[in-house]
Amino acid sequence: MNLWFRLFLMLLRRPWRRPVPGLSTTTIKMRVWPLDLDFNRHVTNGRYFTLADLGRMDYVLRSGAFRAALRHRAIPVVGDVCGKFRRELKLFERFEVRTRMLGWDEKWSFVEHCFVKDGRVIAMVVMRGLFRSRSGTVPPAELARELGMDELSPPLPQWLTEWSKSCDGLSTQLRQMETL
Image (cartoon, rainbow, N blue to C red; front, top):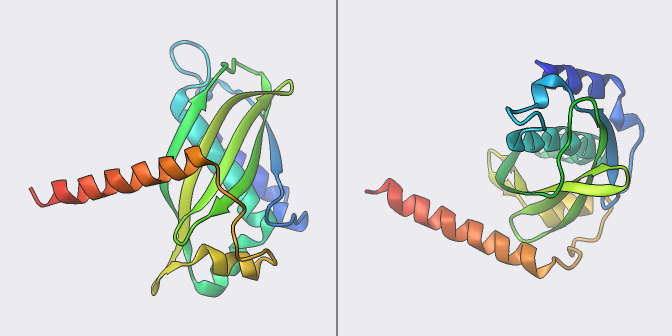
């Protein structure tokens, strides 16, 4: 329930009224609540992915990507997500989720969410996703152009390119398993 509350609170703050350029970093401030915790009394690993969703929604609203998606009648689809956890967040601690676009390829957009407490990155979630319309995937370069950005992606880090390839390999394997 607290995720719905956080979502409504974010929407009440009207993030689309504070637009940012497409490659900017957006920041939302949060606090750890009891329902965020696991049995070890720190934020459960899965909760980071859900909190990243809120950061991504803030980014999509503030960057104007939601307007471009509406023009294409497209919906956002998360393809793959990975997380790296370095420190824990405990009950009632304040933290920020800093979200930015890392870049894109011919199909996927890559978004980074850094969880920051007291100036230290305590966790990172990276997502590759796309916008899908009835006619198929909307090319990320086309969305970038509509947002006033260069159609050419910033250079992607090698680890990100390798991760994306491994996700493609896993997708291929899963399709093969469907036929068994």
